[in-house]
Length: 328
Image (cartoon, rainbow, N blue to C red; front, top):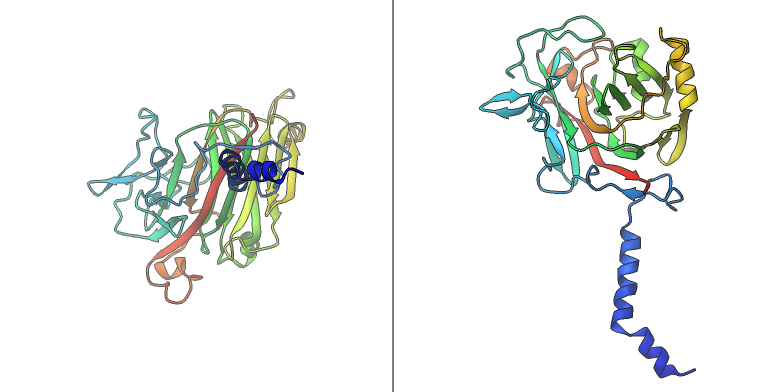
């Protein structure tokens, strides 16, 4: 062997640079937790994904609902100024102050805040009775860019309180709830909620008016507020595969969703129940669920908070990242 030729090839600066760039890009490639070999040929959509590791929240990526101006919350979407923006599920109301970035995480806060300038009108939801906005403020962020189909993943830990920690999306007459996790309940018959995954596809057309065309409630085998977990949602025109901590947890085909809708809703015989076929924008928020119980005081809200953190009137929904991959 000509050792001089071999040595020159091995230490050729351009060859070394190419090798280094290849190794770096391979190591830096972030893949779905359930598909580390990238058999799905996934490409990270950097416009809608977020690692939350910057010094401030990227408002070109997220709309902060209820951002305070002169001490009052404003509910006007910068990209859709003529559309009403939801103020939250009463008795809680969205406040643009209820988030922070800390140690490379986004933290959404639910606060006991009776002196907040709450909306004076009663909130009349599509489902349930009208309620007054009072005492509790929560956080809500809306993604400013839409996408259609892909693999959606979040690593998060729910708030350990009688409050929901939610990751969902909205499109044209479409809602996809990736999860609505209820961290804790004071009601003995609802203790199971702290370990339950509730996810849904909802049709907001006149035919169904927001009812789920497909929904599941399944026990996760762990308390959602005890630790961080990875929730993955593989979504395409054929249906959905749901992964938890990298393992397939549930799946539904478009045909199964249609069958569910026709059996459980008052719809025409030819109704297509798989309505998750339109572009969506991501949402992150917290809400009160009056049908599961609402904190009655600061002490009640912080019943499960660690010692030393029970007096600040705040409970946290922590998010390490949100990532979306698509197939070219």
